[in-house]
Image (tube, rainbow, N blue to C red; front, side):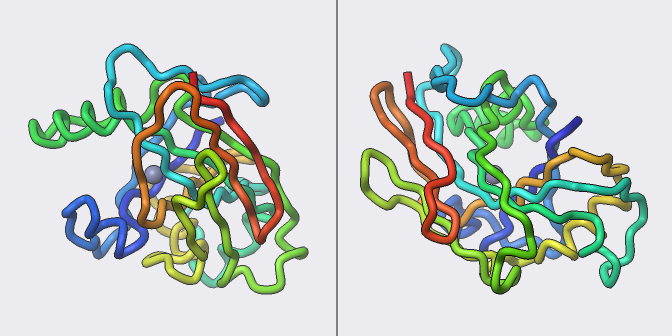
Length: 203
Ligand code: ZN
């Protein structure tokens, strides 16, 4: 399986990193080797001094998707979860400045935390799913699917033009503002519609 990630899908986050707001989704891929095994701690990799948390809504694909029209996209996922797209920001900035791909900064081992999935039918409104990340008990990031520049159906439609989505593939839908560094000893807890969804210790 693969994880397709969306960059700059919240206007305020694009601005906090001094990026322009895109007119087509920015896509990159994390391989399955980047997924942090459940209940494992996240170890800050030796090649970065500035790893950031990015809390994101995650969609799980339940049907093979290729060139899907937006109006049918809702049939291709039935679960929503939460995850962290860990990013070695110092390395990413260096790579971006050189015009090089971001994979070393985004797709390293352990860089993808995936929490629990909730059936789509249990959400009152998929267009307004609220989520939050707490660091050491303090809220650091809060968002809602309603604030996305490209909604879930648009993302499935655009992504499936480029990459066939297979059953079990995940889409990380982008992070809202409030990204920031983690250090050894921190504890991150994700909440989906007010319910604890995952926790991860930083080492
Ligand atoms: Zn991200």
